[in-house]
Amino acid sequence: MKRLSISVRLRLAFAVLIAVIAVETWMAVNRMHAMYADFEAAVATQMTNALTATEGAGYNGDNARLTAQAIADGSVSPAIEAEMKAQSMALTGCIDELDYGVQDQHSREMLQKIRQLRTPYLDARKATLSLLKAGKRDDARRKFNAEVLPALKEYRKSWLDLAAYQGEMARNSAKAAAEHYASGRNQVVGLSALAALIALLFSIVVAHTIVSRQPK
Image 1 (spheres, rainbow, N blue to C red):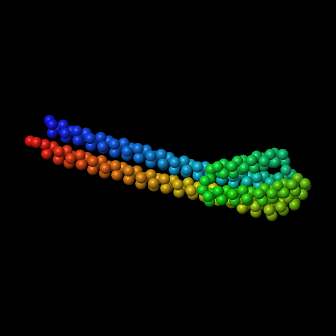
Image 2 (cartoon, rainbow, N blue to C red):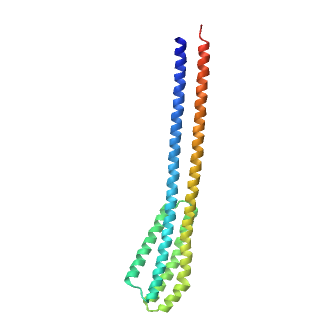
Image 3 (cartoon, rainbow, N blue to C red):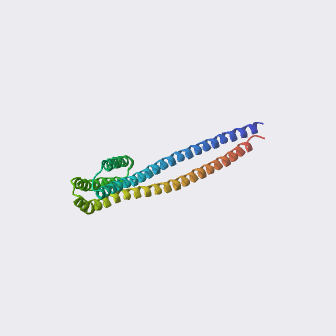
């Protein structure tokens, strides 16, 4: 009984050790889940940025279309003017959202380029509308073709470039997160299993050694 009691106590001690290893493994896996959640949040932010930039490109395209419509009508109606104002405000909102959402240096440089290209585009469009309101429809059309459209092309491209870049970042982040999570999980589980096996074998050897040395 005495020998059995020692053996049982040792096995219980090492069983506790194995339990501790299991708990640590569980905690490590939980930390990996939390880390993966952070990756997912980053991907979600980057996808939101891509959608916002795409939406911004749509807004400035709509305003150019409204300007062309006003030229075709020969006047700037209150309805068109109100819609253009609303589109411009929405586009400003997109810039503000991106200013908060983009974090990396390259994306911030791209956003700064959007701001820089917006000014000549808005100036050309404003001058075109002023000519139209003054009754100079032909001059307005010439200015629209010579200045508004080229400025719009560069301006809209800057929005689409940012959208594409943020989308690419999101795809790369998602791929890296999945690979990192799978690799880390396999390592944690493998090392924990190995540690548990070593602890179990060690407990058996030690218990057998102690029991065998007890007086007959």
